Length: 235
Image (tube, rainbow, N blue to C red; front, side):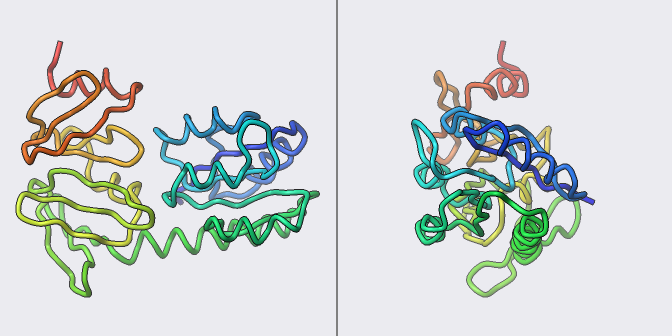
């Protein structure tokens, strides 16, 4: 069973420990990290394959609502709060669910099952891998065949992926993680949270920017730069 990667964010140590114990009790969940500081969490999730974020709302430096707006819509967010009044604000940011402290395990399980159903639907509905060199994607009501070698890059845009080939651009509802499982090394590389690129499409590298053969420039995450240079054979 493929596990869903989770991050926990709460400035209260006991609250973090409770949620982490709940996550470890669910077979399809995996804890990547737990954070007291939401800013540290934001930096972490930008370059990690995170599926679900469990976040408190009332926190110093950055509250949970601000955090979710900074994250965008690439992952499921479940708020954990001591205040029911925050629920409406939470749903307006696109949160999947909210849990009120003290959190009960049965209510937690209901929320994560809801999140899993949502993620399973996103992953299964729009991408169909036929064999090692091609996929079909659902776009504009059609199933379109795309040869993997023609893909220049893939960009996550909220709940959708923008798939760019030399002759066209397609938009389909799917996660970048599901595409990353198809577009693997050594031909493709995820250079930051929102982009996977075809290494054969790289024209030049300037500092932390990569220019592709179609003129598109993409920034490289700092912790990905050394690996990218190794893959490109740059000393």
